[in-house]
Length: 141
Image 1 (tube, rainbow, N blue to C red):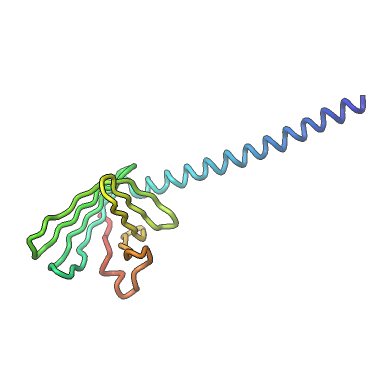
Image 2: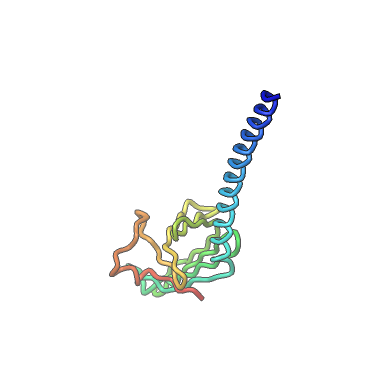
């Protein structure tokens, strides 16, 4: 009888441990989904616009709009006869760094996110120097 009771207790203990691990895994998965949803919700239906410096033109008019799943980016040059650009693609957040990946081109944009603005990062994917950061700022509209 004691052996049966010990066996039942052992099986229950094993089941409880396994069940606890499953709960932790499921909790971690739900947290990751919430994190992704939060990033999408933070940007959904928002637009950022600004004027960026240009070496061979007066200024670049830049605009990025977001919905729940993708971004829409366009820019136009002022002061030169050059075509503007439009693209759309997917985006993701990691530690307030926003990565935009075009659907049709090899373009990858990296931006630093804040509640009121986003800042284009240089092509080494590092932040711009503080004295240049304000020049590459797109304000939220």
